[in-house]
Image (cartoon, rainbow, N blue to C red; front, side):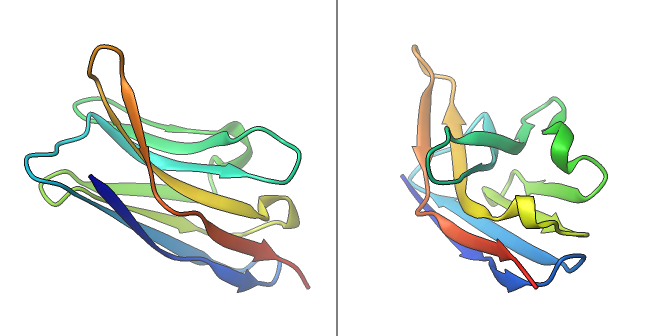
Length: 117
């Protein structure tokens, strides 16, 4: 299984960026897909995740500004990030979770998002 992420970059406060991620692997169909982020010295934190057949969850800090969309048939997720703030600066990681026993997380290579004037 591989997760291929794209997007990110540098933007001014109030601007927009988007991230995309595609999961590939024969027969792979993750139960959940989404994005996490991490800044140096802190734990990786949830940004947004879509659970197949269920809800899309957002961190409180991004509600109303970020929108996650998922194409289950093609194993892709897209994160639209609007009204970005300097505190959104982080390395963003695509995640796909399979509900094996125990559940297993697949991670993409991180992509940098920098919000700065």
